[in-house]
Amino acid sequence: MSPRRRPAVGTRLFARTVHGLEHVAAQELRERDCTVLAVSPRQLVLRGPAALLDRPPRTVDDLFHLVLAAPDPGPTKPDLVVLSRLLARAPLRAPDVPLVSVSASTAGRRTYSRHDVEDTVGAVLAARLGTVYVSRRDGRVPPPGAVDWRVTIDAHGVHIGLRGTRPPLHRRPWKVASVPGTLHPPVAAAMIRLAGVRPGDLVVDPCCGAGTVLVESPVPGIGSDLAGVAAARVNAHHRRDIAWLRADARRLPYPAASVDHIITNPPWDRQVAANGTVPEFLREWRRVLRPGGRLTCLTPWPSLPGFRTLARYPISLFGQHPVITVCVPC
Ligand SMILES: C[S@@+](CC[C@H](N)C(=O)[O-])C[C@H]1O[C@@H](n2cnc3c(N)ncnc32)[C@H](O)[C@@H]1O
Image (cartoon, rainbow, N blue to C red):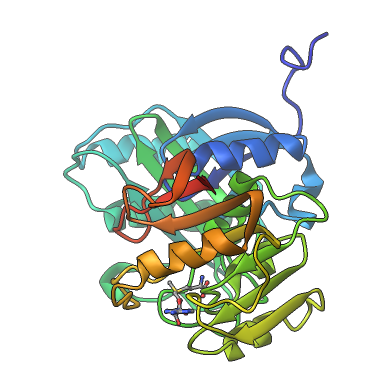
């Protein structure tokens, strides 16, 4: 039987991703023996081995045990009754906990809010599980002991699940120090994959901030930043194979043609000022990259002068629309 025909086995899950990274996450999950059943904006439905969460995937934001998958209940408030009925009949296996919380997202025009969905699902869960539901309405934050349920409703249907990890996967335990404009770790993990980093490569992040790219990278590296590397050092206390130094990305202290990969998100005048330094960055990065070495960067810029683009991956991130560009000096 060919691998494509093999029946999907394992736990039913759904993963949430940054929009634009769905296919990167799908590739990582397939490498981890998962069967990806459906891909839609920001979401993947899959079957995966129970041990998946022992070493969680890096490129997804969050992973949930799928409890209910059904067609879109509809766009109007009375349609939420349909959702209640569906959930009331669904097989539920859930931990015995005193509190549950629900977080929902909806896509498309609907006459109900995400809080309406949360409260509908929360009421059914509380009744069926004999627990107390804590609403997020009016900005309330559920207490730490609450078990998180997730609901997504879009054109592809409704999916309801129980969070597989706590905290969410994108909140890395190592990331205790931050800087303005710090990178979302699953995006850093995706950039490393898209760059094509191989064992033995040297990766440099010349605008390293809190060190996210290099801490997510499986290979040794050097991180530098004009504003200092105190946050990066704290975050990378477990990584002896990364060197940190204060340096200007326009004058890097490395010989010409000595670096395999530059992977970075430089300042782009949103949270961190670029002050017209971009052309100088690009000139210096061309100098230190070895022939065939790659620059992989997250920026909103349509082109990177002096570099030939190999691939572009637009993403949506916190209301902005930057692009991961993989390129080589030309
Ligand atoms: C968007 S932040 C990078 C965040 C980082 N990737 C992280 O995960 O925390 C841009 C960084 O570029 C640094 N920077 C700005 N101008 C620089 C320069 N001329 N040389 C080196 N770093 C610079 C800033 O200090 C800031 O930390």
